[in-house]
Length: 192
Ligand SMILES: [Zn+2]
Image (cartoon, rainbow, N blue to C red; front, side):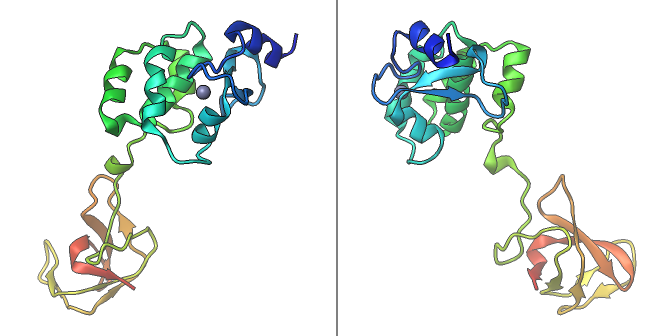
């Protein structure tokens, strides 16, 4: 029996996430390379297009996870976990996540696509105008800055090339002023 046939049989031919029976397809959890019954589930066209971000998320549709997260099949649990993570800013998905239990192996696979990463908590450095700064960029100082621990004043208009980012703090970058490595506050620079 093929993977698809097994999935059809175990689900009685309904979407394992929302129980719809339209456009059912086999979905293998990325980044799995080999499809098998344990890392695949049967999903409908509506679920699939949202999973693959071909259409916008319909938050109400995913209330179905309230039931499907309790599926006995780990692949279904993992997919439910991933979708709840994407929706967690809605509030209720976070409550469901708190109730979910995945063992270590399942959790590792669930996390493999990064759905749990919180975009807003990533450290992003921005200049005075909100432009994103990246390592290696050049910036110009928009005001005179005292260099900490020295008598140097870095003048407004000084270009600082090849900056480095402080990965702990979005407000700090580093760069060379007068051949001295200094820490600079991002709100006092403009990207060149
Ligand atoms: Zn569905």
